[in-house]
Image (cartoon, rainbow, N blue to C red; front, side):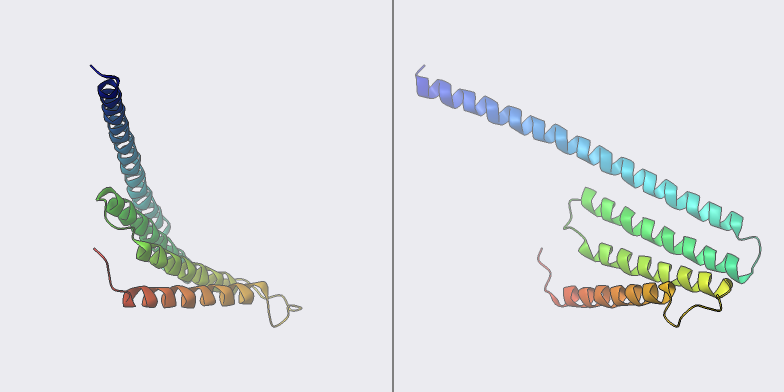
Length: 159
């Protein structure tokens, strides 16, 4: 056997070992993603159960917190669908993160509105409060994310 043949044989063994290591790493990666998906599903179920337990009265604060929790469940489900899309080895779903950002911003706007409407305003407070600034920032974020979604929808999809 010539030195060139031994060199090629050693290189083939190295490539085979490298390929098997990659397969093991990908399987571990898939297992971790499956565990994350399972825990996201459990978290969603727990939030729904907690929300139903808390929603004993149909008063405004209870309903607003229920809506807040349901929007949180939608965020969890969007994350779950993102993980499932990754497991199917599909293209990275950036649109899911835009939806999550929009839902999160709307959720926060609703909670700010609920907190300000159910709390008593201090008499010495100015026209522009911290809550008003937050509402403006979240509204701008929603507009930017909606524009991003619109622009992404205009781009032809590559498969």
